[in-house]
Length: 305
Length: 292
Image (cartoon, rainbow over all chains, first blue to last red; front, side, top):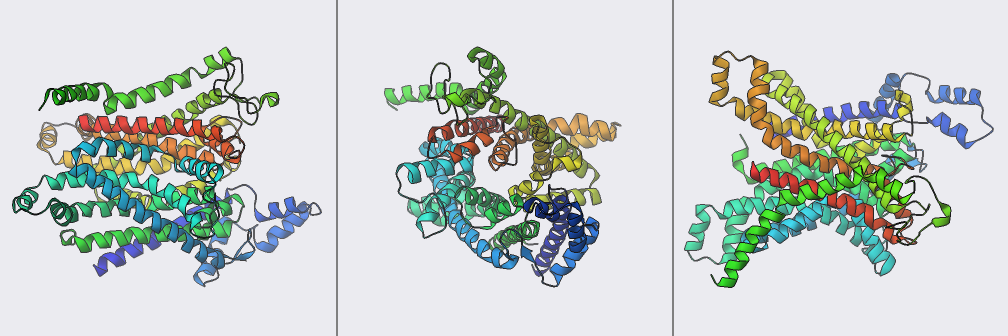
């Protein structure tokens, strides 16, 4: 196990280094470098000022040289400043990460809970299966940003019960969490239904029933633990789409977090912030995937060699 | 079983045949495709242009001239929906074809060559799968096409750009699927038999393995259409996909979001169109999977 973790961590590191280089290159291809932006902001500056600014900040040097300079600064722990917010990048990243993790954690818990509940219901009561199935297809086909807008129109604009956005108090969490929960629930419902249907047909379940155990005990104590393992795989594979969901939801509900930070940084040409936020989001995603993998191995010793 | 039960049972059988997943999915997609094809004819019939503002007719209520009313610039909502369908379906099908083609080719290559080719491709796939896709797509979509030598701001360039970006992430799932399926096929006796009777490796891959793994690949391609339509609309909604004035369901919703207080109904139709199209793809894929 320690060997596996080391290997995976190394793989993560390589992915992050490659990702940072690729994004650095891409940012060089985006419209408007900082000197262009300074000129656009101040009409008194001319082309020669731009050239001087570029030389001053090293923007006239080749991309590869600038990347190496940036990487060595990173390794020394100098993460630099955000142009858009005029603050150190670290002062922006940690609160944003905390806010996103709260949002994602809550909605992951809810969607897994409700999804698994629906899936088990479909497996235990075949009469309910078509309804659960239809619900799952509906949920997974709904674009998250549209659902968010509809919820805002209904609960914030028409009824006025909940705030349309922001991050003040628990009330502002309700709509974003609901949006993410509905969108993520389908995968859990479908996989839980499939896994439970398979497990409930196994002989040991019949034995448990024949022993006279109650239906609930058979379902939750005997069948469910075995069906739950594949669900961890779903959770592991879903970490990336959770972060993607956060970007959309946070942007719609104007909720400060990693997703909105990345979007705002890209749109505002704040490249240092964008790059670091993206790397942090990628690192957290990969760590979450690794954690789900390890949990799976711990629960099912057959997976470990 | 009472008579009523039996009747119910029989009717359910008819219902499944008539309203089975494949049938519903194909009907939904067919209707969308037909509507998209008929967009210019309807534009001629109604006598409007989908992209041209008509400021004397802003927020018009539904009427015979404007069946779904008009938006904040007085453009006909129904026409914009139909032209949006063209964009969404084009991107969806183009991404599905490109990603499935690339993914199948790379998956077969990995399965067939094994060794370092396999390791390299699969590590690349793992890496791409482990990353959050949308934040990366946002970065990639923000790249200035003019710096790469493409003209900026044309709808056809936008469609091509989004198709390329989504293909970049879309091939991974298909590649893993086709690799796994090809590996299990290659272990079967008929492959050994074909080899012994002197079939070339190319013939083996294209004539024997590929047809036998095509079932799951077709299902994956159908799902890829759904995924691409959702991603395109998300990017367009975020202002990084199809740029206005060309209509796309995503940028119509982005426009509607700004008008949530004045014209909330404008937010309903484009989302419903996305929902029905994506659900159609999912149902079709489900139906195909259960059959084969």
